[in-house]
Image 1 (cartoon, rainbow, N blue to C red):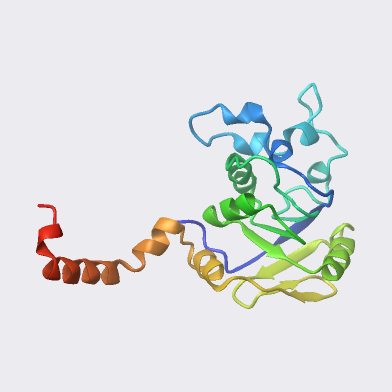
Image 2: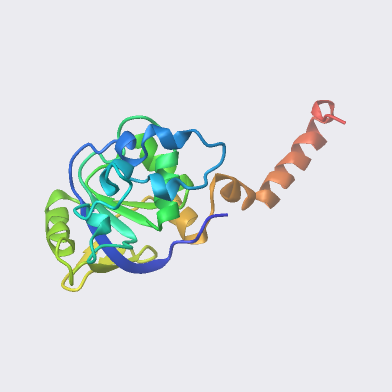
Length: 204
């Protein structure tokens, strides 16, 4: 099971450069662990921290108006590069629940779904208006209502499309295993009928 995503409110931060890859999102030195612990520290590590380990005050997630953001508004092709799932684990550990952009890299997008992070794709015109709003402190508090497919801001609402299966999994907090188990009764019924008709296939 994952954390369900129905309606969540919080701050949104702009990270609008194009083609931000997973090496930037989660540098390679954080891939050595055998568990997922501490990946929130690694998220955007080379951007968030100076060489001496202190916070970089110029990075958006370290600034007072955007610190603790639950949402990122991203540039095109966000999450390109290697397929490392650690990038999404780190975002989830830091409290990022959704990404809003014009496009996302395919494997990264799939990794987000598997870990309960919503990705929303908007048209460029909508993105420009949203990015303008959330780039100013004071107008960067938004609410995402997945069930009704609406992003609400202080000045404007944005509707978005989402795949129905993706929506169902996130609203119910189901990962791939959880989704499969939701069909448990049907699976057992099929299995019983199949072995009844083909008993020689059943492994004792």
